[in-house]
Image 1: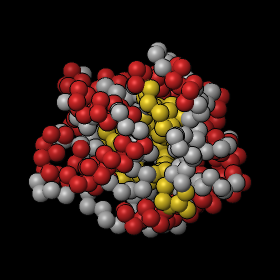
Image 2 (image 1 turned 135 degrees about the vertical axis):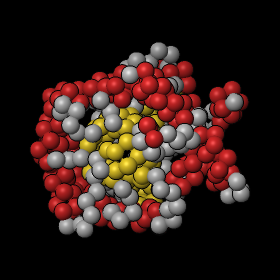
Image 3 (image 1 turned 60 degrees about the vertical axis):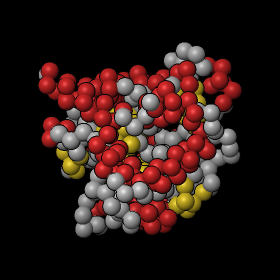
Image 4 (image 1 turned 90 degrees about the vertical axis):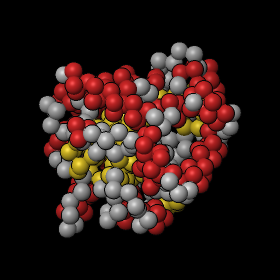
Length: 347
């Protein structure tokens, strides 16, 4: 029903407008008595064989919602009923900011992809905390950390520290996002010295907390293997808890039908099916280089249960969906978990 009826209607509307509309509708529906239980029966799959313990946290299953969907922690409670084991909010910056000029998100429907140049639009760390204080769900919540666009790269470490400390008591793990292609020169923070400064300072801040929470690094699919080796070395030497692989790509590879539309859309990070192979390649590379000792959250181009299994087989401990959720609908989470159970039975 979603792909035959609901999605064609939604895709008639501007992507950013439809996102807000869907959130409003979901919030309204979940305010009705009985809706959460009904949705859980449709979308959730509970089985002890799906449970995972990764970087010291318990997950009911391996499937999460990637950052970028719930930027302001405004609807994670409602989405927790859709079968996700974890939801990553953000990217969150110290101060609220509007992001890049509109239009800034584009559908490549024939390739089941999106191009976005949102630019870390969010209401800021303090507003995120206000929402996180309303937490009703027991699922794992991650906090994706970014810097304000107006903050110079030389001062970026202060932004990451501020948001890290502000969110610390309200999320379960952190993701350092220095790889979003939609913030000018942000990718330069992936360079060795800049990345070391940010991660070392965050570890220092964490060491002063009464409870240690995992810190992960989100990396770009556009890194070459030499750059990947440098990042892996830093993460290994500092004992960072894990990777999120990968972010969106500035590349326009593996487009079969929408190359002209992609060119017309202009700059931005591409997600969805065309990213699948590159994301899996990077997950496999990291897993092999680290002998599988550093957990990886795999994200990028997961639109089918087979895509999810591919990521797990490549070395991911957990997976996240975003574009696949938009194209395939809310039952995708349950379908993936069913496939995981079936695969584990076969193996």
